[in-house]
Every structure is written in structure tokens, then in C-alpha cells.
Length: 255
Image 1 (cartoon, rainbow, N blue to C red):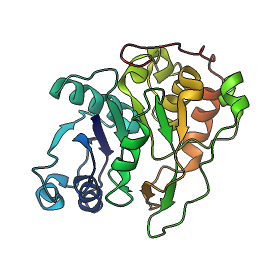
Image 2: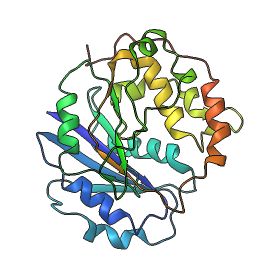
Image 3: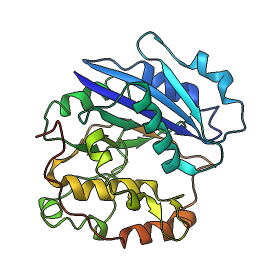
Image 4: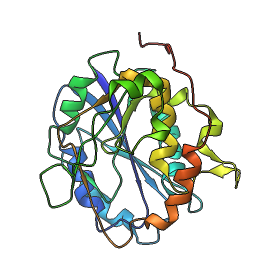
């Protein structure tokens, strides 16, 4: 049975968390899942909405951790992943899923669809597709990468198409060289450009074992607190310029 760990990073998302957590707690299918909330130094009293936001708490409980200072999404994902591994230790086959606290899973079968895909041990990670909140059709933003991209490993030079829903096996996450997650200009984890900082090295390691899912599994919410493009443009360019990683042949537990 597929073991999912659902990481929910957020900052001042109290008005959106009920819908987000409800969408996770209502998931159905043949899988095991646990959720982890990562509060990125919020100041909006989000704790008061959590008990009322979950349906079927016996099916999925949520553990929470608060970061001591604002670090943005990547630092929150790292903190949530550490919490999840401490809660119930990962195997390399464990699948990590991200659902931002202001977004939501699209329907009760999202994790069930993902679980079916991960029955194939040669799937190491997945991406796409999402719809904007309030809509049902795919945004059209995510697309399947061509075979040539996997052969050449030139993801950093290609248009960005590998977004939500993001998921990957813990063994792949553990294989990312730590320096890939660090902004050399600050010596700290990348503050902006989280998608690029995580997905590009994992794509380079996984190659053809990355799988595009055409079903809409994720609702992305556009609102006034979304990160302005002006803030992540330069980090994304610098992440693209980082050294390309070689294809990973295997990690424990996955053929």
C-alpha cells in the first residue's frame, strides 16, 4: 500500500486552511496517508481554524510545526519533511506530496489516482495538472515533457511545465545534493523559486521515471498574498544556471 506524507506549508492562510485540510482529510482510496502542517511564522491565529477544518479525523490526523522565523516555502517543506520522517520513519518508497495551505486537492480521489500511478515502482516523481481555484478545467500550464528532455537531461533550458500537483519518493528527495537547495548568494535555502530549486534536480536524477498526470488533482488559488513574479524571476534564473546533475541509476527500495 502506498504511504503518502502530505506536507502543507503556509503563512497567514487561516482563511484558506479549512478548505485545504478538508480536501486532504476527505481523500479516499487504497493508500495510507498522514498530514503535516508547517506554519511559516504566521501571525493570524491559524490554530483556531484547524479543529473545525477536518472531516474524518480518524482517517487522517495532522501534526504541526512552526518555523522560528519566516523562511518561505522551501524551508517549510524541509521542516515538514523532517517532522514527517521523525513521526513515522520514511522508507525510500514513501511518497511525499505538497499541498500549499492556501490551495486544495481537487476532489476526493486525487490521492487515489496518485496511488495508482505509484504502483509502478519505476515512477519516482509526478507533476501536473492543476486548475485555478473556482475552475474545473486544467490551467493548461503543465505539459508532458518530451522523451528528448529525459534523454538529454536539459530541463533547466526548457520552458517550465512541471508544477502542481508535485510528488516524489523519499529516496529521490534524499538524493538531492544539499547544495542544490542553497542560494549561494545568502548561504541559506532558496527563499523564492521553490519549484525550480526542488523539481529541477529531481527531474535530472529521475529522468524518464518522472510521470506527468493529465488529471486535474490540484486547485491553485490566486490571491493578493501570492509571491509577485518580480521576486522569483532572478532566483529562478540563477537556479537554472546551476550545474546539471547526472541521472541516478537507483536508490534503495526502488528498481
